[in-house]
Length: 472
Ligand code: SF4
Ligand code: SF4
Image 1 (spheres, helix red, strand yellow):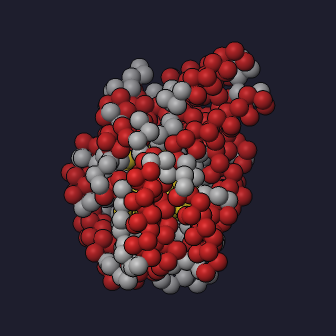
Image 2: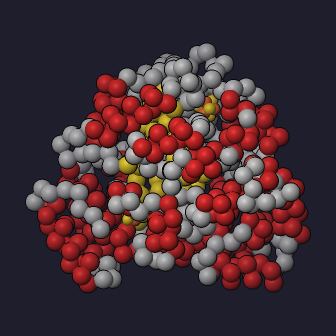
Image 3: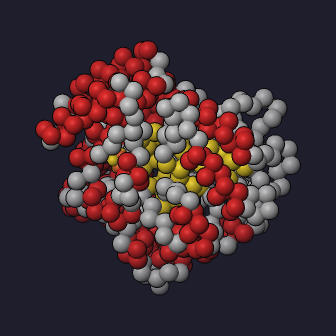
C-alpha cells in the first residue's frame, strides 16, 4: 500500500499509486477547471504533490501549458534570480561490476578502455579543472568493490580538497557513487562531501530489474532506499534523478516526485537537487534501442512541471544536452549546469584519442567553460561558482528553511557576483571578462539590501586587489 512514511521502497514508490495517478491524470487532462485550480495552487510557490503535478504534465490544452511554462519561468526567477551554478563532473574510475544495459561501463563491455586514476593523476585532473576556473565538482565512479573501494573514493576526496594552485581550489565535492551502506555514507560525510547524488535510473521496478540484469545494482529496493541510508549516515543533501528514455516519462515523473515527498515526510527535507538526464549515445549504446525516448518539447515540459512541483529544489542539466535545449530549459527551471565537461576517465588533462574511448556518454555541448560562461552572460544570466552554503554549514533542513522563507536571496546574488568576479580575473578570456564586468556592475544594483550591496562592492574591490574567497 502507498505510504510515503514507510522505509520500504515498494511502499513509498508504490506501483499501484503511480498507475492510479496516471489514470487520474489521463482522465483530467482536458479538465480546465481542475487544471486552473492546480495552476493557482502552484502560484503559491509551496509545490504540488505527484497527483496534481501529473495532471499538469498530462494536460494537452496549449493555452494552459503556456501558463505552466510562464509560471515555471516566474518561479525560477523568484527562487534563483538570474543565477546559474556551474560545476564539472570528474570521472575517477570506470570499472564496474554491474550490467546496466544503457551504460557502456557495464561489466560485459570488453572493448571500452578501463581506467582508474591514481592520486597523482587526480592531482593533474584537478589542476586542469582549477585552471578552467571550476570550484565545484561531481565525482563519478562505476561500482567495483575491488578496483574502486570506498577507501579509494575517500582518499580521492581528500586529495581533491588538498590541492591549492594559484588562486584555485575545489570548494565543494559532490559524489555520485553506487548505493552503499549507512557506515560508508557516514565516512563520506566525514570526508566533507557536498551532495550525494544517485540516479534512480527508473522507478518502474519491473523495468528496473530487466535494465539491471546483473550485479549488486539489480537489487531495486537497496538502490531505491539508498537516500534514506545516506541521510541516516548524516548526509544532509541528496540529489535524485531518473534517466529519461528508459521507461514511460510520466511514470518516472510521478515516481520522482513521490521520492521527494517521501524524503521530506521522513527526514524533513526533500532532495537538494534533481537531475534530468536523457539516454545518450555512447560506446556500445544506441539510444534508439530504448523505446521511451522523449522529444525536446516533452523534455521542456517535464522540466517546467518539476519546477512548479518542487520550487526549492535545484535542477541540474549536463552536457548530454545541446546548446539550444540547454537554453530552453534554463528559462523553465534548470539552476545548475556543467561546462567544459569531459565524461572520460582522465579526460581533462589528456584528451582521449579516438580509439581510446573511456567515456560514459557522448557530450552534446562541447564548448569550453569560458564559452559557456560568456554565453550565459550574453543571455543575461549570472554564472555562479558559489559554494557558500555548504561551507557555512547551511545544508539540509537549514538550507531548505532559508530557501523556503526566501532568505537565501540575500546571500545568493552577492555570492554569485563575488565568485564570478574571481572567475573573470583569474580565468576568463578578455571578451568574457569585459562582458562579465558589465554584468556585475548592472547586477550589483539589484541587491536589495543597501548594507549588503555596499559590503559586496567593498569585497569586489578587494578581489580586484588580489584577495579571494569572500562570502555572505
Ligand atoms: S550506470 Fe553506473 S552502475 Fe551501471 S554500468 Fe554504468 S557505471 Fe556501472
Ligand atoms: S548562497 Fe547557497 S544557495 Fe546561494 S548560490 Fe551560494 S551555495 Fe547556492
